[in-house]
Image (tube, rainbow over all chains, first blue to last red; front, side):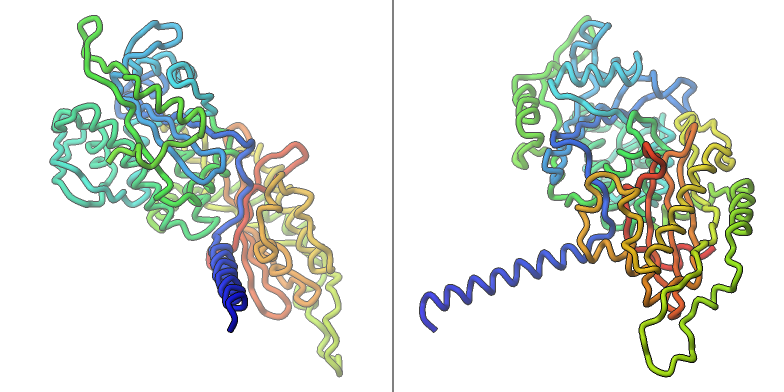
Length: 295
Length: 204
């Protein structure tokens, strides 16, 4: 075979592999969903309230001890999770400078406005859950498998005593995992990161377990039942379908950088210039680089 | 996802009002001749393609067990009862569309996806994927002997979405199933998602 003929044969072989790979990828699709509207990044504010059942207050007006921006890249091929420590000292519309978790006291719309003000991103929707919602959702998923970094013990709240290592957490254990900060050497920063870890682990797990469109809709129902949100039903279906298409390797998470300080006698976290760099990166590209990911 | 399924079953409330409505719809729309009469004639001495069925499709509408009340979620104050009557027009509209879609397919038409699909949905699908909800369900060569639609959904003040799991048995004896998800659109049900389903998913 001559040189050009060999190159042609090689090119054809490569083309065949690509076509077969594409065909097998297509054949493996479990459903076809309408894409999210628009060509911009989609930004969702994920809030975890410290109120709501079993506590008497409303989850909608508690403090947001979970405060995360989930950004779907414009190409809809990657997700970035940017997690704010609850003590982040920021400007809250109508409340001056205070801890970011206080923004939810004025309602999720104020929390959303705060996220926009701090990050410069246009935030499309918010979604909120509380203790009871988290516990019930994790239990209905049959638990979530997480690599617990260290022993965690929450004698006052969930009363779970978690040992380090990979394990399947039930709802109450997941609450301990995401709530306990006193056992953690890195305190609230570690706790903040645990929220994103649980989200990422849950994503990876349901992505592997959801077998078809009917399963997907059961998941959508589960999300709807244990959260409140501004997400219209139509968009929730599209968003869930999209999330399950995105490979876990394309989910990047990062805790917003800050340094511990004080304000008005309270311990707070001042965001550093590195935080603004992350915001700028998200505004520009709609994604965090994998190298930025927290471990 | 079986672990998701189990608790949902716990929450499941079969809708008496919907069941009644579905039963009524079934009575109204029941074909005058047995479904088996749509089978190709056995007297044909050669083997021409089967004649298209002239029997309109009237699927059996099964109330789903997975209705979600999207009001009062985080307070968990919402009673676990079936959805209100306000969802019934949407449920009926989806059932009627499915009947018309299958009927068009078994008569050799392209089906009615264009009438309900939201922008971007059909172009996102390959021909093979589209076939799951068109030619695989019904065709002149395989007209509908019976169809069943299981309908689950979510509602707040009105329907949020409706998941229709469609099981079609053809006169050739084959059974195919698909899942289609509808949301309220400007002109009625709007299809946002579809995919293959396993026939047991519609077993009641």
